[in-house]
Image (cartoon, rainbow, N blue to C red):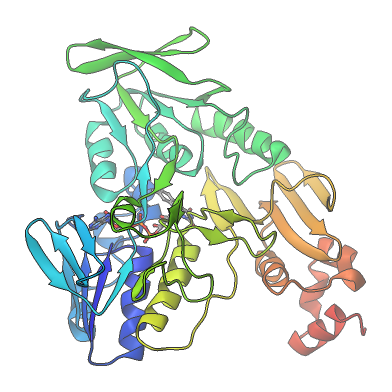
Length: 419
Ligand SMILES: Cc1cc2nc3c(=O)[nH]c(=O)nc-3n(C[C@H](O)[C@H](O)[C@H](O)COP(=O)(O)OP(=O)(O)OC[C@H]3O[C@@H](n4cnc5c(N)ncnc54)[C@H](O)[C@@H]3O)c2cc1C
């Protein structure tokens, strides 16, 4: 059996490893347009701020791939998929497959801005190559501007603030980290980052144009008219699923690649897709969305790999979950953190820089935001994933750690309301 995987990051690696578990002899080839073997993409911000070295970012050793007979073809972009003849093309070369998985991830979204394109001090921050370029360009006298206060923009800003003279972050939304934090917790994190990181935020703003000196941008103009001096511009507005290959091959795509929600097979037999390039169904509210997060990519890649190799593992359910830290603030969020109004309700506890918010729908926990209060994140995630009935212990859950006092069997009894 010949397996081809396009993309060698979280989803692609998980897919290859699962195929090998199910099929000891199949031929596994993974194409990546990057120059590197699989590495931890979230760690690029740690590379920027000097907290990790490049050698520590790689997910496995080269000898591991040799032992597992997973063959990587680097620096090679797949340019076309021919589902009729079951081949993929890299330029003129064609490679045959029996089963194919598309794990092409995300591409950066660059909003229209005047006089930005082609300038030498403009960067994205999405992969190891771009992180190295940003790191090489960032100097102690650099005045950096980051567009976007989402996860990627904030991580870029944190890294840059350890190196540069100043960092300005421009965000269209009225708050930072809008997709992982609610309004109150967003404010808490913003205050902390401003204090600790000396980052200036420009919220509900965007960059309308840049001013240049030769090939370099020298300042940016916000829509308010304010002008920010700028030696380096990092565009981190957001990402979009990389679906060009799938679309050209005639697969069903609606923002992301559409797959069967149990098997990850696309609209075409023997072609699977996993990770950031796909549309996920959020198990908590049934909505179709792009969940561009690492654990989701690994999960989907594993299921796709199992299915490709004849295994029985199916996708259980997807939801957003995230654990990060900014300047020492430990942030864990999960589920429907922006759910508001009927049928949702919440409980909030806030003291100094510790914040706990649980979000409920009827008798189920459907989300949480924890800042410097992550002791019970595992239990909460478990309750969310299992959609447990928490009627008997809603307050108990909120007041944890009381649940820890019980062993697993007792806890399950309590969850059923029997204690
Ligand atoms: C700075 C940063 C911080 C992040 N922090 C977090 C975090 O804290 N928590 C979290 O859960 N997630 C985080 N993420 C998101 C996480 O990294 C992604 O969700 C995850 O990497 C998705 O994995 P993937 O395999 O689907 O796609 P990707 O990681 O995007 O990998 C896709 C790969 O496919 C390759 N490719 C694309 N097209 C082709 C082609 N035609 N031919 C060959 N190769 C191709 C790409 O070059 C890329 O190497 C972060 C991302 C970034 C950039």
